[in-house]
Image (cartoon, rainbow, N blue to C red; front, side):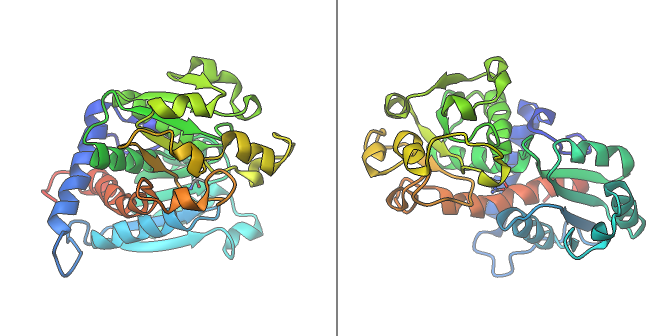
Amino acid sequence: MKRHLLESADLDRDDATLVLDTAAQIDQALAGREVKKLPTLRGRTVVNLFYEDSTRTRISFELAAKRLSADVINFSAKGSSVSKGESLKDTALTLEAMGSDAIVVRHGASGAPHRLAHWVRGSVVNAGDGTHEHPTQALLDAYTIRQRLGRLEGVRVAIVGDVLHSRVARSNVWLLNTLGAEVTMIAPPTLLPVGVGSWPVEVSYDLDSVLPKADVVMMLRVQAERMNASFFPSAREYSRRYGLDGRRMALLDDDAIVMHPGPMNRGMEIAAEVADSVRSTIVEQVGNGVSVRMAVLYLLLGGNEPA
Ligand code: NCD
């Protein structure tokens, strides 16, 4: 593994498989234990540096670090000296001067973790940068697919919805491609990025025709907070063409699964009956997120001792 995890492209097949296998080992080691904690990162400090709102990702990284016995500092830009104008660089150098070994960063600007990685000596983990990447989400998604379907090679994954604004989609495309899965993007033309032609994916505008051939359907949140124009006529229209409801779910193969990174807009991209169905892995994804992030922190910081 490299020193940082900045994007899915940092991971070749061996690295990605190592993360997934390590997460599985950690799951096994902790299963049935009363105290769900390993001593591996005792004495190390992990800083969660969050410039954007987050529920799952922040708590998941915090839990992951704590279960490895690291000290954890949670920094959110709101309420810090960032509101006095302090820059990302000065903030990071301040945190490092206090002894942080790894910085987990979420930022509204694509590329912020890359900049950070040039300024600090410790490891940097990208927890979501603008519309660019969210590599640990892709890793936990891959882990969940492998757990449910037993493999990733040749698995047909449909990624549906607001691809344009989705760092989850971008990270998944690269990682799934590295791991041998076949990806189809389904979105309104207005919500596909200009460069999608150069991605290793198929593109379709017709969800109903893709669903019967999919092993995995990954629904994306419509990211209204990143939209400054009208990308579709109305929520109702969007949901009618690109939402996953009970009728559409019935088109899926018996073993196919439905994923969503959260937070969901229930009733918009996904109907409640789908989100709460047995096909849905949404809650498992959250649980797997902790194991996968433990694996990432362990491999970046602990490395050579057995987990
Ligand atoms: C995603 C994110 O923030 O990029 N959420 C997450 O980390 N689970 C997706 C989203 O906000 O839609």
